[in-house]
Image 1 (spheres, rainbow, N blue to C red):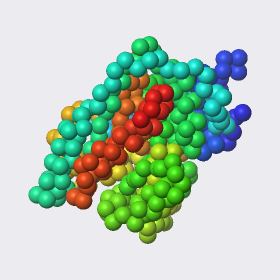
Image 2 (cartoon, one colour):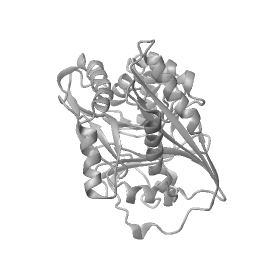
Image 3 (tube, rainbow, N blue to C red):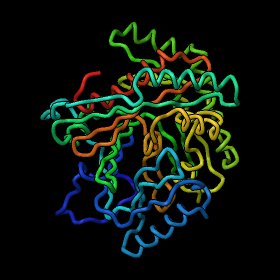
Image 4 (tube, rainbow, N blue to C red):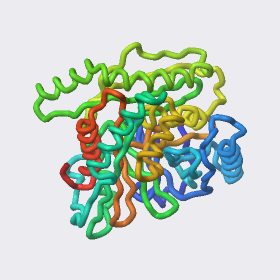
Length: 392
């Protein structure tokens, strides 16, 4: 069923979209599904808030090309990497439509993933803990106050991974997140379920819902409530969270008629974690500012990079033994009217045939403890491991 007034382009009703081989993005009770590619946009997103930037100029031309082909309100979809100076993974689809969000149940999980052959963490536990300790020492001798450090988990299966089963599993286990599936030019697929809204824009109105500070969910209800309460009372986690909300508010303040920032974060829960959450919203001065511009203005936030941003980025480059690529970047959509949604690319993985690479990160501040941060990233990996049919 087609819903709403958001971007939709005509298609042949006799050829339904296969959402498991297409871009898809779920938000609330809606799902955007696309088919085909009119044009790829790989211009880096650095400086993408500026309407004269390379990305915005390429987007303007691409939208006009799509209009010439009969698309009344074309849409751009895809992903942008953690480092916006690297190539974007965006495209204008041939067809797009909004559907009612499909509900998945355990009954829909037919089949199993192939046997797991091997897996490894990059870095391993000892290397990650050394990086945490290195960052803490750096805080004492520099202006860096927070750095987000990450790990990757490489998995090899006996046969090709079933993306449809993986997506259904994620939907059953995480029914309320922002689910996404992005086909990439190299044949890989970026898939995941993010809890974190970077920006949503409709007309002049926008919302950003950053998360920073987390605690593990517990099976026992009393233990779970205690975990939530400890997070709500944690000075360390509130300190970490404050960098994110203050930075986002500072980036948006000059663009707004109104800006509302909560005085204190609230608790948000996923299947695996409690998070400190702040819902920031307001009205823009200029309605012509598009959602992708706003996303580029905010990205990367201190929730995935650190604070101050550029100094934290340098520290990450020094201590992390890999390029993040699309992990902790952003994924979403923006239409030619400027509306759109972009979420932070966390709780995600790259799948290419029988190879899977998963990602997780943790915010490090001076009060961090290396053992606890390792436990946190392993908990965060659990969402996608379960999506692969694996236990923690």
